[in-house]
Length: 76
Image (cartoon, rainbow, N blue to C red; front, side):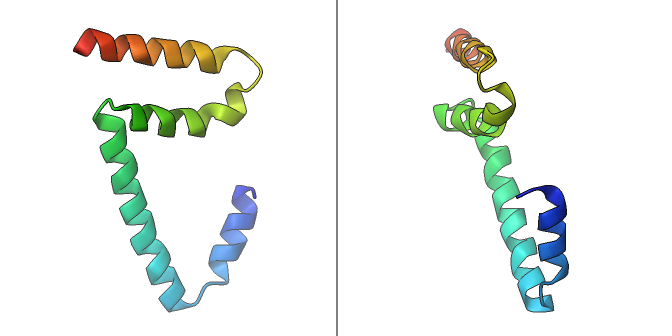
């Protein structure tokens, strides 16, 4: 699903559904921010999943993972 399809689907939502979507987005954003700032393996996995499509097959994903794990080790 691309952004245009998502926008079209959102445009068809009822006011109640739109309110539910806003609440979910706010909660989801909070979880993502919390995970991204704590340096945990879970936040690394979230970041890697977001990047997986653009980095697939280029060896960059592995390099990114190794770099992030080195950063975590330095912080300990």
